[in-house]
Image (tube, rainbow, N blue to C red; front, side, top):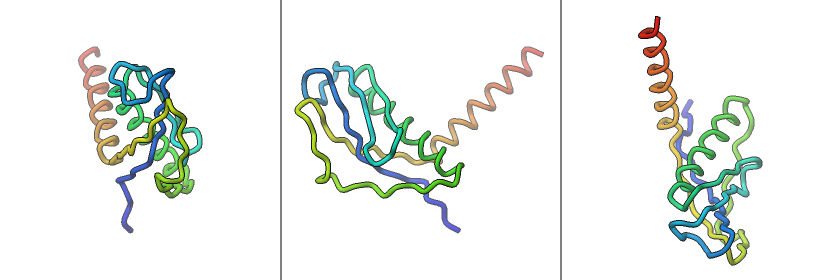
Length: 115
């Protein structure tokens, strides 16, 4: 059985004023194809990182719960407001799990040092 680990979905970044990407603008992020996948960023670069984390967490949750993973929509299907921009967010769930394992190992090591 082959398990898919790489995913790509379009996210809509919204700012309060100017169209993104404006490096200093705060933004909210939503994935129209994935219900409940929303995030925000202090600026555009932070928003991209937060969008990747959000997408990975939601997809992992769906996989762990045995829920279906929706197919991504084509970019032409999205209608954007003037203060919105569409961005393709890609994640590899292996990277996310590797970070979780490192964090767990560090926490265990800290507990052993304190004991």
